[in-house]
Amino acid sequence: MVTAQQIKELREKTGAGISDVKKALEDSGGDMVKAEGALVRKLGGSASKRAGRTTGAGIVDVYLHSNEKMGVMIELFCETDFVARNPAFRELAHDLAMQVAAMRPIYLSFDAVPRDVWDLEKSQVADEVKKMGKPAQVAEQIIDGKLKAFFGAISLLEQPFVKDQDKTIKELINEAIGKFGENIKVGKFVRFEI
Image (cartoon, rainbow, N blue to C red; front, side, top):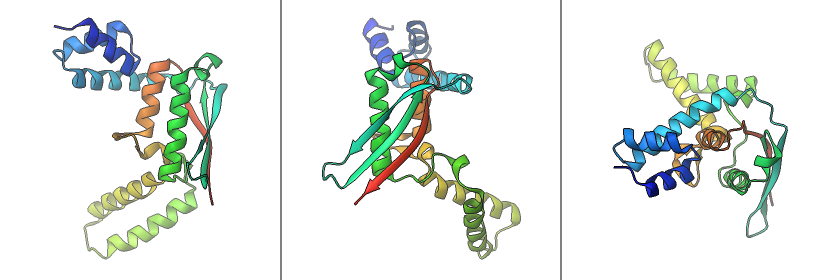
């Protein structure tokens, strides 16, 4: 049996509507973890529907490390000022700034990697894999895997979230899109270090 307390907790965690939360809990037999996973998949799916919408509002967040020798500035866009002023949105922006500080991404996503940089890394990886003597199809899979791992480690959206290693930054943003009901995009970010 699903309790009001379970519904409240899961709703606060995911930002989903009451009926969606109740249904997810009922479908999972009251298992909070399974219900949350189902809601995240559902809310994440709503992210692709909102991806084309204009993000004309947002904030710039700044993170300054306690030793004052490293800092980050990041833009986080949304559709309305109402969401931009929301404390949870501001917390998301700050979490992203801390992510940039901790993980030192160079690119926003795989798509942002310049073609010549990608091609140079691919040729180096291909040379390594060629020495393994694997069949062509297997070699191509190894090359793709190594490139995704290499560029994933330096692309913000592909990195595991420092506060929860089980989700990527892309998944974190998709959850926020579902929670706020608006398109959310990371703009520019810059990391300074002395």
